[in-house]
Image (cartoon, rainbow, N blue to C red; front, side, top):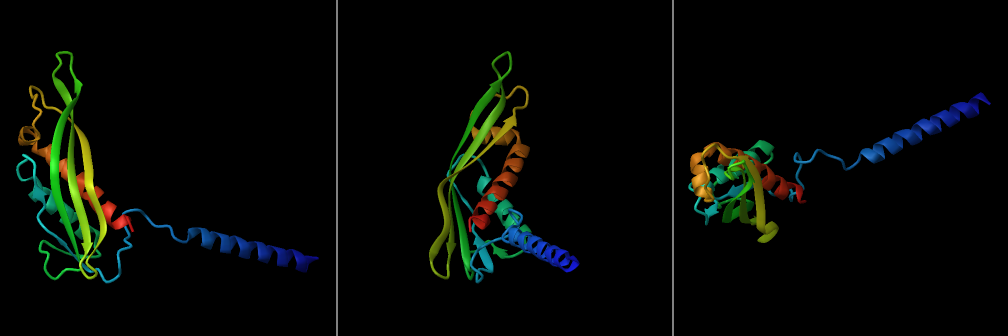
Length: 183
């Protein structure tokens, strides 16, 4: 009888271990892995194209995306499309600034800022698109500084460079996660 109990305990423990090990397979923290082809070691991130009136937006976003990719630590990131395994190109198509909240005097207190961009991530070895989004939208809300009521994104960011800096950090995180986690 004792032998049957021990055998049952052993089988139960073994089944629990197998179940635990099987359930743990395939799980990873989002944003820390990548399922890109193994031969991709270097990524070119060219200067983004800016079709908006927001000054220097392309420079700031290009720099932030490069930094975000470097922070992932797996790839060599360069600003040139030469001698790389994959290439990220981004064209900022439009920007809008919309007041979303007003005070008692009907002065805007909160703005919703959005950018639309055409994004393509291309494998240069096989000359195929690995990931793209022809109309990727980034949105953020920001409180307006007192006395400001402008609907032009360039004027808004000219008055609040910190808003552009905060938004560009989020854009970089979102864009890089979309590309690397899409696989």
